[in-house]
Length: 110
Figure 1 (cartoon, helix red, strand yellow):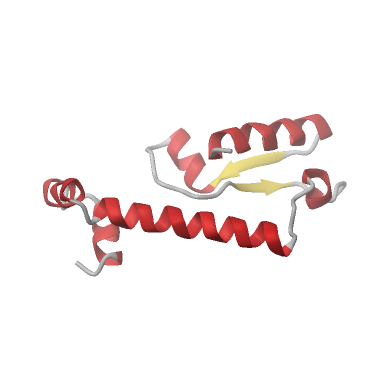
Figure 2: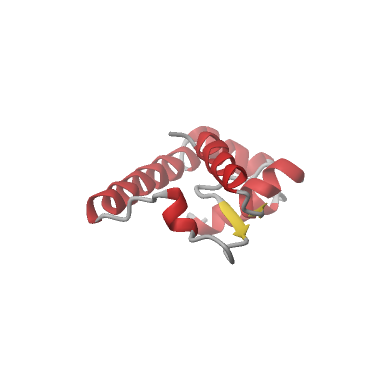
């Protein structure tokens, strides 16, 4: 499932349960300001009346967590590979003043 589909499902469950929440982090920045790569959904949730993890039924089994970590690692390797490609190097050169490009370059040790 992709991140936006996850966000739709999460929002629907929180709305259905009447739980107040606010989107924050990279997705909020992408929606309200400018796009930014992110791998997660950050929300502030009013959990005073509800146990959010129970509501969402998040699978925290060892197998599920291991599978999520493997997917994140695979995505990380793919992103680094793309950043290290000729297209990535061209973008780095063309947009060298861009803060996101600078952070990526720093992370790659350039």
